Length: 122
Image 1 (cartoon, rainbow, N blue to C red):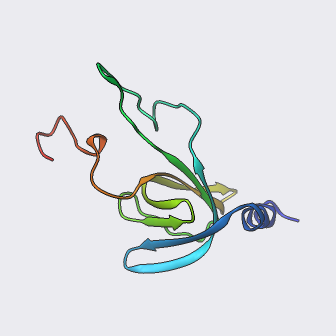
Image 2: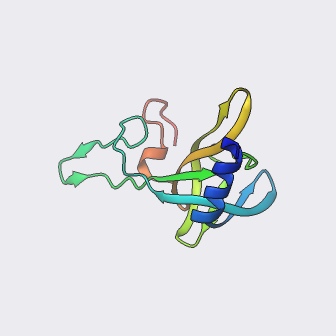
Image 3: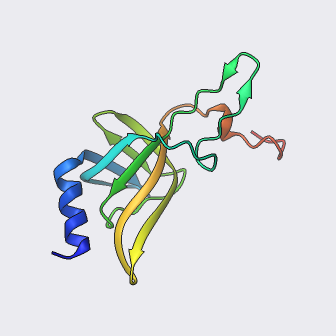
């Protein structure tokens, strides 16, 4: 069994049903969506405020390589909720796509960390 087939069968077996809406089209499939537990400052942030920490829920998406995700536009719905893609990439081995991963945030109103404080615009 090749690495691609092994990953696709693992995602099919351990992942859940999802719907991806991106660029006007909707695709159904299976993927793993779980809370992002690794506290890497690149993805999490973690700015401390006087009244405590800013709530910054992030989720990890791992899906088959055929999902076409777009940052800040693709919406993923699963049993656990509705999310928007904040960062995404395809992982390749020898020029062959193996899987797609993404960092997700809950879908909804713009949150404080979605604004660019340096630009002066909202």
